Amino acid sequence: MYELVSQLLMYGDLPKDSILFRLGEIFGRFQAGGDRTELVRDINTQVKRILMVATDYGFDDNLWHNYLTFVLMMSENPFSITCEKTGASEGSVNGLVQRDFDIFRELFDYDFSGIEEALGISCFTQISDYRAIEKKELMYNRSVSEKVRALSKKLEEARDGKAFFDAVTGFYRDYGVGMFGLNRAFRIDEKPEGGILFRPINNMDTVMLDDLVGYELQKKKLVDNTEAFVQGRRANNVLLFGDSGTGKSTSIKAIVNQYYDDGLRMIEIYKHQFRYLSTVIAEIKNRNYRFIIYMDDLSFEEFEIEYKFLKAVIEGGVETKPENILIYATSNRRHLIKESWNDRNDQDSANDRHHSDTVEEKLSLVNRFGVTINYSKPTQKEYFDIVIHLARRAGVTMPDEELKAEANKWELAHGGISGRTAEQFVSYLASQVEAFR
Image: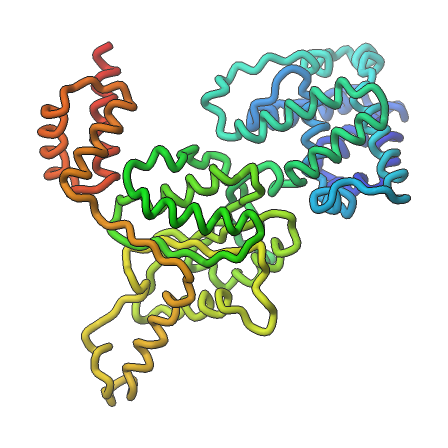
């Protein structure tokens, strides 16, 4: 194995702490007559790491094959990124990559019996026919798991090197490579040494637009803009504003779920991270995806100046804003920035001589969102309609009139009428039904 791993070219830039790199190094020590106790300990450590990856992603059957497939899916290199954009085309680089794929085929079929017999272990045999205990419906990474296991089966069944090549490059073309190919939503973390790191959101809500009752005009407006975006047509940044609990954030999540297969991805960014907006855009502007930079519950106090960074990014400076990036934001404030009565006074020598200019600067941020969608609080009739719809979908059979009466009591004690209140009420009813089954 050490010789095989060391011969990788395009896929050879493995982190030194990666499982494949460590196993190659361990097998090299085995061939050189290394200490048996240390070898067994180090092999067990790497097999445990494979099991941890399998638990995180719900791998099953042959975990060694699943792991190697995962490595191929996550390897961002010039070849895989080119395949993501245009598919595999003819060229001399294909010959070099084909050699790498031949090595992975050998790793797929690697015979571990020799080292197992010599060291008195059986861990590789055990993970080659593994049955996961965890229920699939509880997995946070179900989408990733399904893709890995499906491609792993294709690679197992590949008759020759060309079939292996076609399976991997076909995946790159259809889904992409790396974390952006496997996941639909991300956050960013700040590195201690500076810069940013993308983190997949593995437990994103699987809500769809049909799950949001009502707000048909609002949803259509959002869908029309997003469809234009994913189809490469002109589209606008979007601001969803209105009362809390009306489904603004839910609509954004549902849009991402609905258009994931069309290459739509979402990056959630918080207000204190706005100084990294330019860095985020630089990282994603050349990828073959459409990105929504999502800002939830966006608002600014009078003393906060982060909105200036946002204005600059939305409008663009010398560099044109990339066509594969839009900003979607939600807010309870129509104008995003807190306004005071003093803003109405044009002359005030105490602070700013021309308050009208200040007001105009604040309002100009909202004007940079080409589409604004109002999610207002539902009427009582709309609230009852939402409750009845959600209750029937949850299997609650309480008569409509009784359901309305109880829903009315609930909203009076739980923050007033809203879609969120209706959902919380129905969740409570459903839990009571389940408790008495």
